[in-house]
Image 1 (cartoon, rainbow, N blue to C red):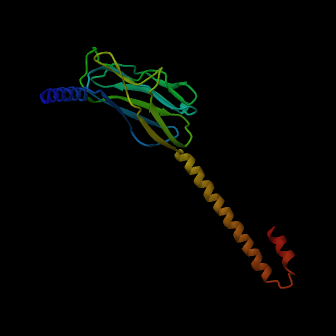
Image 2: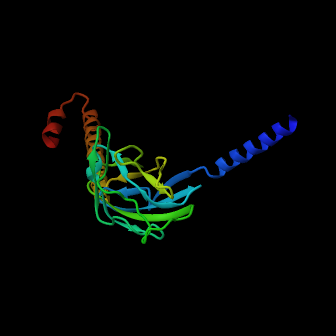
Image 3: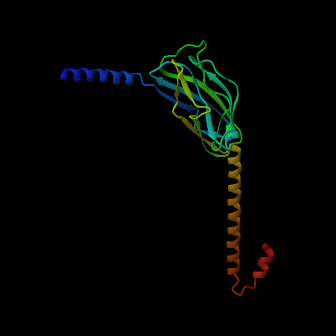
Length: 225
């Protein structure tokens, strides 16, 4: 009986270990070329795909941003790297919107050319080029999609879809240098005006103080008004 239990335990342990070793793990990292940009600027985004427990034929990747901000950002082109060197490379807009988010109108993923299985590992899969158009100052966050009809997935050797957990990146938009300069000039001008007004009031008090009976008050008003 003890031998039977021991044998069953060993077999169960081997099966559990095999399941653990064959577990499919997938992740995505999105790395922008900076974190602070002007309102009409450009930047690039690097995408790193990691998976283990399986080999892959390719992947699909869609990005989304909060609805209402989609017109500020445009993907002008893409570069796909070996081994996922085939995919759409043209311009992409955030045009497909639901109640909360707008996603890209093209699949940003890729596949080997010719179609072959890519072993598990970490790959720098692509670079996206962004342009910004009149974005309001603030913080903007972009996400990889997770839900249908445009899920971000990796297709394995059995043609199963392995979901990519949601990845994100954020950038901060600041006013253009010319705008800051104009704001600075306005602040300086406002400060000078305030200073002159205070000096004017102080001068009036001093001169009236020289006239105990206020006989010179009317004369002062004629001279300064």
